[in-house]
Image (tube, rainbow, N blue to C red):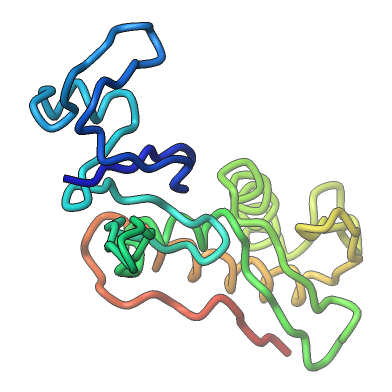
Length: 191
């Protein structure tokens, strides 16, 4: 039987382990195949048929690991599947919403959708909706995008950006809670 040592999702060593094998803690085993699977797996050694899944943060996908013997050499193989829908929604929530403004291109940016930003946007939006003006009767307001740049907006622009962000977050929350099965677009267009 062939075994592979997996660390950080990559095969770092292989062995048929039919002879004496010394574990990192110094324990010697005569035959890895008779060593309890849970103990073997806890040290990162897996039989060719029981590789663990790994996660690729770049592609946001799970890869079910497997090892195939290619010309007698254990080689990592993957069956790639998308992350669960709720995890994809959480990832989109962390990334923010790309907004394109057709009327004021300078407002086009990716805006954050984290809870702190949502709360700040909502508090200003409540005042704006109730009074028709920004807090302190300001004529314009500043909104920071996900990259840290500030954008000066009018009341109408603020409401358009706030509404787009709120709709995006609400849809993602419904996906995370299992109420929707379709992810929203990660971009929106406002006037």
